[in-house]
Image (cartoon, rainbow, N blue to C red; front, side, top):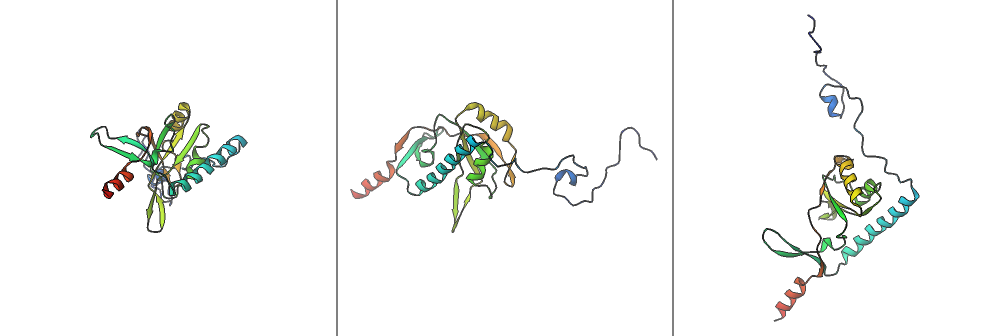
Length: 195
């Protein structure tokens, strides 16, 4: 019996492969690959990357011995006020991207090397969660750009690309950075206890 039209029988694939297109019975033209080459060839980018990586390490050390400065935040729905010390280091005039779906193998250095191709990259941060004796990333991070064009190009080009073992999901960071104040809540509580 012949086939009518362009209908062909579905080919059953018996090859073992991790590519999801092969599992559906179709042979792919290309295989999924990890991210781009992460080596830095431009000497100017290399100089900039060394400076930013040193800043990342310096901020880690400073966060261990942090002062009382924090950014005042107000919840728009409830009007509740609180202080967030994690936003002190961010420049309010820069454009921030939320980087979601990070695997446990992604570090700040890897995220930095992934986004260094955008010249106005200014800061990379992945919050850590301490469990017992080791710290792991929380599965998300933030990237900051000084230029709006780099911010938009990065969002369009890198959304869904693999960084480490998972594809990342990019979104505009929703937190607006306000003014930096010295946190009064610790000293206020001490004063109340003394009375």
